[in-house]
Image 1: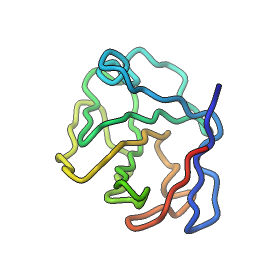
Image 2: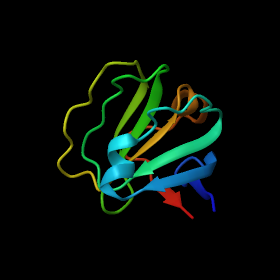
Image 3: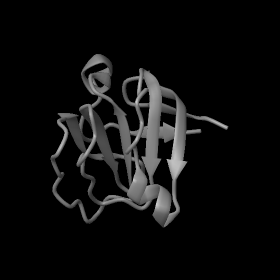
Image 4: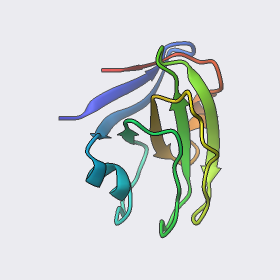
Length: 115
């Protein structure tokens, strides 16, 4: 079953085919091995204060959310073989196709809903 991710602050759809990674194995694997990460898809990693793009063939957008679902940090187009800083207050991270944040104007302090 897919989840929907909305930017409530901007009233925009970020993804309608989101899946979660809560187990240690799924969190470590993340998007590794994924070949098709098109618009509408997303991976929600929980808990997750930092991510990497080692061995990934494409760039991704990332949102780090606080406990109240407010964006702590929005990162546009993180290229392969990079790491993010650690965001100790992040409760989860959302990985999105590159370009999603610019297209939806999603930014720090926006409120995100996941249903």
